[in-house]
Image 1 (tube, rainbow, N blue to C red):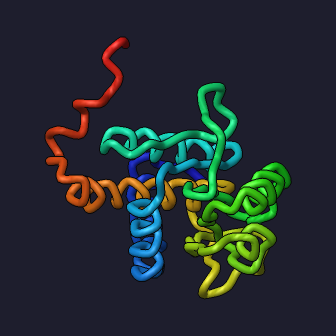
Image 2: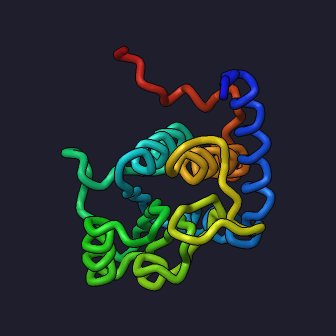
Length: 189
C-alpha cells in the first residue's frame, strides 16, 4: 500500500476532531477551574505525553501562572495548595503512580488526563478527564476505532490540542490579550 503524507495528515486531523468532540465539556471546565484556583500547577507524564504537558506548562507560564514540570531541577516542593496534572493514556505508568502517592500524602489536588478513568491513576485522582482515543489495550469497536497514526499518537496529540485550546479562555481569565502571550516568552534564545 502506498501512503500519501498529506492524506494521512488530513485523516488524522479528522480523527483528532472526532476525539475532541467526545471529550466532556464539563470536565474541561472543571480542569480550568482547578487551574484558576491553584497556587501553582505541576505537570507530570512519561514519554511523549510528558512532552505535551511540558508545552502546556510553558503556555501557562506565558499567562502568568506558576507552572512546573515534575522532575526538572528547578521545580519547587509541591504543597497542599497546588494542582498536579498528570497525563497517562493507560493510567498505569509506574513512576506516575509513585508521584501521585506522594502528592496524595502532601494533600494537593490531582487531575488526571487518561483513556482509562478506572485505572490506578484515575482512581487516585481527585478529578479526571477522559480522552477517548484509540487504545490497543481494548478490542476494536465502534467506540474504540483504530486510527491512522501509530501507537499513542492520538491520545498525545488530542491532549495537546485540548490543553492548548484552554489557553485562550485562561488568557481571558488572566486578562491577557492573545497578542501579549509572548511577553513572558524566553528572550535569551
